Amino acid sequence: MNLSRFCVSNAASFHEDEDYERMPFLPQPKKPARPKRAAIYRNVMPPRYLQMATNQNWNDVWPAAKSFNPSSVPLPVFMGWLKGQPRLGKFNNPELVKIPNFFHLTPPNIKKQCMALKKFCSPWPEGLETDEKIEKHFPVEIVTRDYCHASPTIRDPRARTITMRFKLSQLELDDHSRDKIIRLLGKRYNPLNDLVTIETSSCPFKKQNIDYAFYLLTVVYYESWKTESWEELKEPQDWERFFFEKSSSRKKILDFLKTVDINAETKKEDIKEYEEAIKDIVDNQENDETVDAYGRSVAKLLFSQVK
Amino acid sequence: MLLNSCVGRFVNLQLSVCSSIKGSLQSGSTISWVRNFQTTSCLHKVVVARPKKTKRRTNPVTYEEIHPPHFIAVRKGFNSLNTSNLLAGTRSGETAIEDMFIRKFIEGTWHRLLLGKLIIKRRANLIILSGFFHQSLAPSKFYFLQGYTEEILAYVLKCPVKMEIMTCSDRKALVVTHV
Image 1: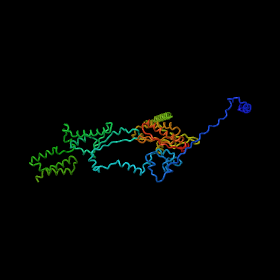
Image 2: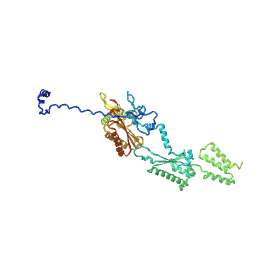
Image 3: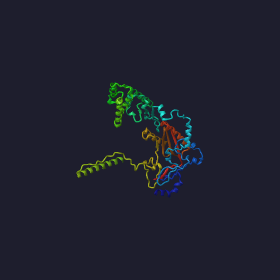
Image 4: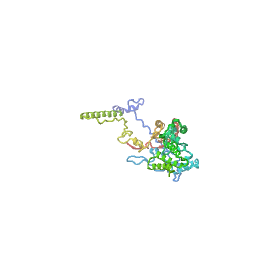
């Protein structure tokens, strides 16, 4: 402070002689401030919706899926919540950009796209009008799955799994092979709707798994038609249902008819009735009704001649 | 801080168990109550992602910043929209890393131009980048940067990349309030 006062008091002597350098310890004169950069104002076009006609074709404005654009949407859209403030409008609102919009899916647009796709469609094949007809002509149903992700790859390891479905009644089977195929299929067979479901995922690709499922079907079918030597050991107690043809009661009734000199051919209908009654009582439930029916069939078979 | 709070908890736990043992010994009964040890990490839901408050309310905040993360899908949407984090979604790790790379790339390439956060949407193999940018560049430079970003990111990420640019003349266009 003292120094500056000293300088001021002696200013005349300093400035008169210009050969003197300015003393380095004196305060530097203030530099003029750097000029502020002028703000650049560009001519930005006004929002497009201000110039839109009310009868315009919206498909031309929004032909395909894209993010929300406030200047092309002639609607007062609001989104967001702020405490004690009005809702945010469509301009400068990132929330509207985040959400998917359906401005490209107006009913006229959908109709237009359907009309464009129509030429690639073929009529429904004749003779396949009902589900029963489809089931008859295409007995095997193969279910494949494709997975769509938002990722650069379309590969998904789960897509290899396939499911094959068909009705067991579609296969040509007799009593023995039907019983055996059900035992071989295990939990793959649903007795409630007679549906066999084979799911394969062992192979890396879908096509290979389909082939493998058909291979499994072939193997299990031919295996069920085979009769192994140990299957002959099956006794009447192991029968899953009553077989009259193989049963001892048929043998006994025929022997009895032979001893009393009655031709079995004449008693054919009575034997059939007896067979039904005994099957009913063994396979189903033993109650008064079935027992009565059994008694009546036996009486008719044995004592109708006597009457 | 997290560690300290955990240690503090543990000490409290020990003290409480000791006092209960002591009390039970004095009363002559057996210990019938055992406190469980909880190892779940703290979420700090009360303080996380809050903008710094100033005395005179001079800190400008956007709509995105004013709502904490637990309001995602309630008051605000996700900034990255993809199927990776859905149930049985694939490559969630790769998607997260790619998103961070894209955000860093945009921050550097569009320096001081991006206002708010970048929105990354994935539809099939297409990546759509949306954001609000300041109008301090000539439109021709905007077009160049857009093409450059799309080309480079498509080459790096091996999938088509599309930018949907929105511009603002005001640098504080997205500011909704001050805290």
